[in-house]
Length: 175
Image (cartoon, rainbow, N blue to C red; front, side, top):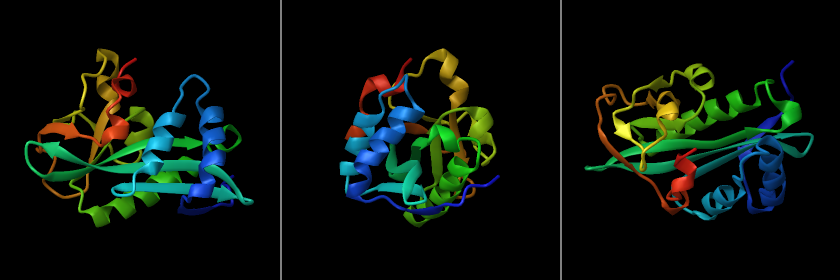
């Protein structure tokens, strides 16, 4: 059954709740430092919160990035989470769809994601991006690096993803 929720941009006061949300959704990973650093960025970060009964139940960030060489603008999707009690109820899907629509205003050529191909494939993401991540990925993660073309004809874009400082931690890109 779909969750009754509203989506809105995050605000500074959401941080304590979002930290708890990520810790609960990803007990094996510590995404809180990345979350904090991304939310400190003032430009090029879209942060959306799903709220049900005045409580955050989901969150997503899209980060504006560039491709080297050149000046192509792309977006990096992640992190994305839903509270354990709200998973598999459409929270993440609504956040992703709303974010994809919003980043079109950035005139991004593509959105890139490192995630489950089965999940992100529902939104049209495809494996095999010619834009490489900033660090080499483990071989078993190759299919997880995916792209969604926002501007027609940009699938042939190639180069290396240039990410802002919160994403420059090599550990985020390795097993």
